[in-house]
Image 1 (cartoon, rainbow, N blue to C red):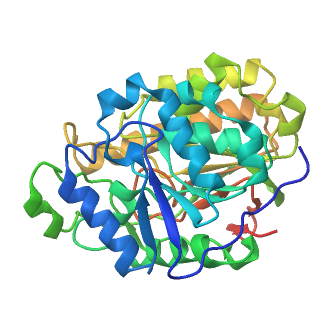
Image 2: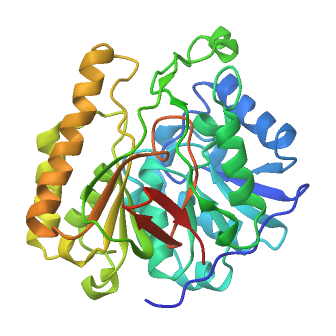
Image 3: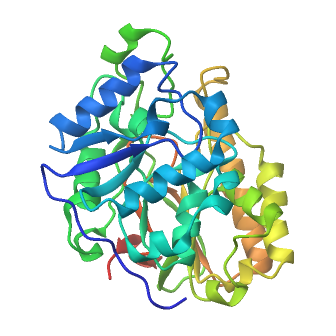
Length: 354
């Protein structure tokens, strides 16, 4: 796969489809969902159009994967829709892929936004040569309690309205971050701000020369399911010279979980094909488990050491960048999946373009 298309940019005032190709929490926490839609309107001047899946509960969606696929295809094919925004992620979106018509998506490239389980759709679009954006879900990025981070707003505006990826340029490190969760069940939390902490910056390991290539990847748990399913992966040779995107979710996988996943990729001859690896900052707590700041820092360091160790075995020349601003922490930049990025260990820069 050498030819990629960046779908047309949106304009302010455009209509964007809101779909739930994974699970859906909007029916459980409508106040959170409504805040996300409000921010789409008021912060970005976009008009959200709720497709049928956006208002169905998770049980219904699980039983009707074909309807989730239909919403995605209908949104892409609708000439009045300029972008497709997901409600949230999930855990079994892979089940909708067999119901998709690749020609509909290929012939109607549309900017798609989502993280986590939406890695399934991002990788599916990658196979079709369509660039998507890893970021921009309604109930997380747009419905951030208190207010949206200026950093997130800036890069979402680029992902929405920039004509090409050169507008991204260098994705600069954020000054602070949070991985705190506030209980969605309490509507009063919409006015609360999550606890932030100073960002220690990015960590660079591995190779010492600049590399560039198109990105492929996403959430580790979803990529693991893709590898197990082995039905929608690109040909191995199509990964030659690419930049691997990795990030872990609120499930807080252990370092051993991540190690086993990467070894599996290594033994399949996949890790050696990538020119470099860009890793999102690891989320180290969730609503039910918060070990404290020192333990959270240790958790992130174990993840770094694990990924660096496995890459040193299977692809020692590849530079690995940790703690980039994408994934399940905040703030985020919606990084292009299928877009070109340069990782420069000397300058310690991550720059998208082309």
